[in-house]
Length: 118
Image 1 (tube, rainbow, N blue to C red):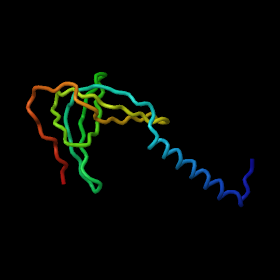
Image 2: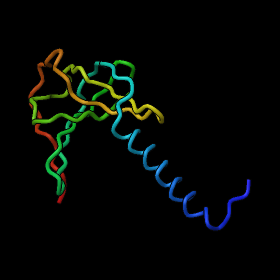
Image 3: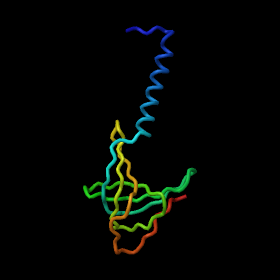
Image 4: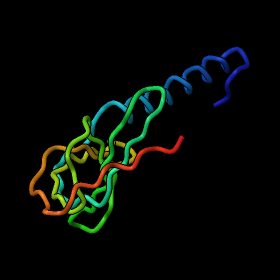
């Protein structure tokens, strides 16, 4: 199949639009959603122009350590057991984690979240 010079811009525009749709689909359409449990290893806070984000690093029951976002400065301590929501992107299979709830609180002393360096 030969594409004429007059049709080349339409092919390029079509390819760019198709790639844009794939990126939007991957970023905004959730794939399989499941719940996983794990224990808090540490916490972090990151700040940028868009605001402050709170993260918990959680070692899942399967042994993998993941970063889970939570909306507020929850009272989490290392050793606390959490339930997380795992969201997998439909095409690539990238996994994101969000805090759902505490399952069990540890008896350790509260450790403040590490602040971002300026």
